[in-house]
Image (cartoon, rainbow over the protein chains, first blue to last red):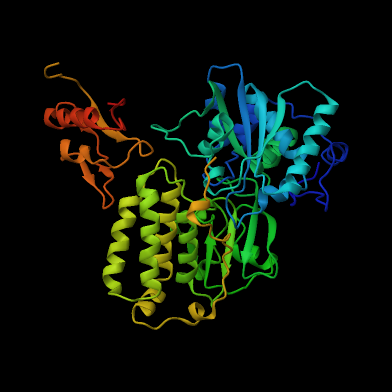
Length: 424
Length: 79
């Protein structure tokens, strides 16, 4: 078997998705001898969707639940506008993802696998459809495979919103009074895992935990897909070993080697100052800076850009993407977008606007049903720290060059009008 | 009902999806609930012992008085 070399998930990736026959030729190895759950536990795989929750612990929790009709949900909704990894994975190795989902199903004892892809990506929907067809034509044994295509929204990829869609055709997050909380479709317990997590599970199921730990660090083993956008030659999805220095990742993405800041994790993630490029790309190295790898997003912000304006654009969009279920999110996020606007284009006393913003951030943090408002709060707080100098310059009326250039590096889907929002 | 003597701690918990910001809880349980600027409750996250009867009483009032039934008194199991 291939030893400790990358690519792993992207091995033999071509322009077309591998068919089932090609897939079995490329990953020609039988299932590992040990028990799948033990291998998964030994591998230390963590969820790649953002929360980095240990997959084995989640699988064990669902395995212990009663129920004879459990679900494995593969989350390939890709809510983050700057992330492309799940769709890249599904358009190169759909069967690797499905392998992993089947292994997870046999761990937790599930009879159903639901692959969720946003319906806004018709090519990927086609790829997944074809892959599912190939599998069911081969054999009808094993868990039942189906695909679901909810409409794309930022919060529709949140796991409770996704399960709500499968259960009741509403992409709205649910309230979870205690955590960990078992989500259910009808009465059936559900395990939701990101597509990349499933693909890693597919590799662990074949090659075992020791092989999986061959790259990465002791606390964050394995490799991860990273979507690099912003000031790069062209947006790319790279596979890197966890713990790779950020500088190396930027170099292999042919990005700006001396950026002003990096946005890590996604739009609910945090800014990291450009001086920290020697940190490794893994959670234990980034945690002291208050940053996490999140959903595998790196946005490179060059020195010519204005971080405040970029933050403002993203916060505005995130405010619009709120499901408007909880008051602190529905009213609070537009309010902090407004405060940021006052700070970026000072028209009244900027000090009081700053104070008000801080106060509101404290009022919103942790008061929604899902983590959407918390993500925005973290994002704005990190911007206040990272761009502190720029904020004071803006406050003195010295708008920076970037804010006048009108060139933007964070991609934001166009803002919809409020009345266009349909939540079903 | 009378005074219940129970060991342990409780927190008042709001379901933010159900909550519509009527603001009754802030008036019924001022020692536990503060209001944010949009009228939604910010509940003291510290667990309170049941022996603090005043707090428990007003938490029960708030739980009963919520028009959307969004509040629950939840016992903290450990300790």
